Image 1 (tube, rainbow, N blue to C red):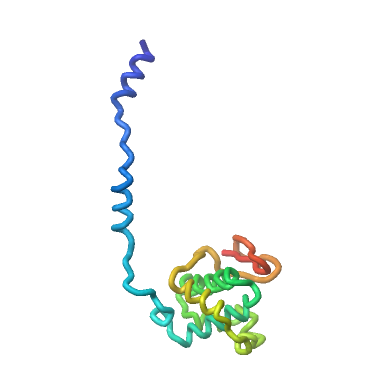
Image 2: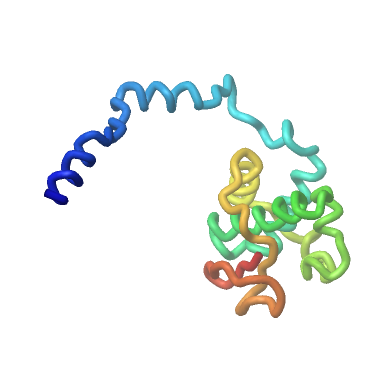
Length: 155
């Protein structure tokens, strides 16, 4: 008898139905942002900051492939957001980038791959969870997140 009561109660509970696929797709279409033309980097930052960012990424990650350059770009942009500073302030902040202290940043030739990686990240960032990186091992501060090729990324 007890099982019969439980079964009757379960039958009275209505399980919500899953939305129809068409309705779900329509809902997704409404939420999409329509962009009439691709966003260009110069619409986000100045030409000077774009060039500086590209030179820093090239100097730091020139041999790390496209994805390595993306991650270094994200670290710089994430620092800008976290500390409410400009790209120039972040890059030239004392003791932050060895390529600034050794002047490598001013000696590199920026590749098209680096420009593409930086442009892509300015349009749509890949990683928001990384703030620091270094070669060969994790920093003694921060929380390790992942490594890619020679770089170790932390938050």
